[in-house]
Image 1 (tube, one colour):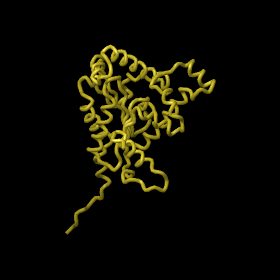
Image 2 (cartoon, helix red, strand yellow):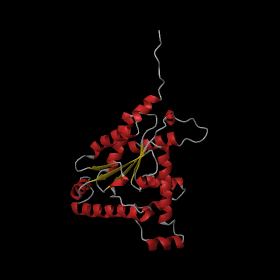
Image 3 (cartoon, one colour):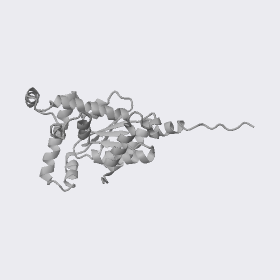
Image 4 (cartoon, one colour):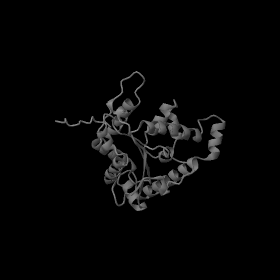
Length: 252
């Protein structure tokens, strides 16, 4: 049995939000405002930590029968499943701009779908998740893909290079030198991905509702900051109250 809390929340989310025709939907379907929160991050700034802490915080502050689900690395699996692609395709879906020449050759000879086609399928899956709501999506240009949705709230995490490197080193899987190379490579890959496929610069502050420096505010603290901002922005608590029956006092 899988005891991963994030996995269990995703399963609960999918069962609640995507129940098929004829099935009884959960009570959370009555909630009209179901936001999507996107998190764009510099490498090592704590995006995954923020996402998981944020889902727990929102579930606690605005309880519903539907859990908030986090989609980060697992969004690749969601894309493959939704579009009936083999799992082997995952290695062709890095969050990076792939060589245009390689892409053309691979598409020409039918080796696998071109990176443009995979990005398109990823965007479709992100939109489906976003339309369902009560979901937090990390990376994959989700902020640009959902930019026209009134229920979307966009967050960016930044931090100094050295602090982000040290955060990677603290995971115990890389030396300091390896972590420096990793952070530089991943930062460049994420910038290239957004610029190449969506003609956007992730460092543009106008793409976001909130930009948080995790040198100053830890990812755990940021979860509270973002959660409270989302609750206020969408008036979630008052909206919940407004759905309750209004009792008028008897006039004697």
